[in-house]
Length: 199
Image (spheres, one colour):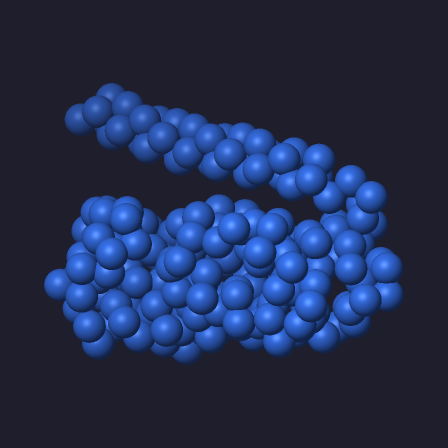
């Protein structure tokens, strides 16, 4: 599947990139990070324009994210549960809503590019939790532009080592996610112990 998607982007350029990232942002599991890195490699070879690629990737991602938000907002928990079942990944909606409320805007920003596997579920949960639309859009646009610019730039500068870079980024993302989780759990434990001592 990766080879087919890469061939489509190679043949059709930024319109294909826009379409694929839109579909992925709605929740279909596609290798978007790899596509953005490859797009950067294509830019270094003169086959694609940098600004068009960043714009197409960011705009497609924002459109897909807004679709997910709208499904959660107006479809409700029943539709979200059905959709997550269709995508083969049942999600604990209440846990995601709690994350949206706890993380707020910075959480939306980080799940656009650093913790991107959580992105589609955070979109749905933001809608069901009634997170303000304008605030969601602000953090979403900021995060998607950041993600598109970072991964396309990395692909551009490391164009001869695309697959190695992709593997390193995958490992790095999980390491950062584990570090963030450890910090959050450590903070909660510290708060709990301090409260218990005060009582």
